[in-house]
Image (cartoon, rainbow, N blue to C red; front, side, top):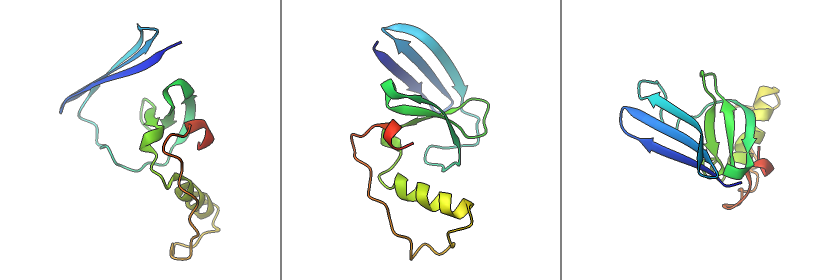
Length: 115
């Protein structure tokens, strides 16, 4: 099955279409009045892995889950995951200078191996 995600965005609206074998499966129209921006950092819960898209749908507290592609993770995602996990458990001090970084993720890796 061939899966495609088509996004058409402007300053006031984004149209997102999910196609499977060329047939429309889902269409989402989002108005640009939300108070979030590309590049914002959120703490969320992975709800679904879309391995054919190499992406995940993440609950960040909005009505609809956020779409997160593997290429948007950033190479240091494993270090951030470790630091956050330790901080939430109370095992990490707020001083990051002594934190040992994890290896960067591969540029062409799979989201299921990271999340």
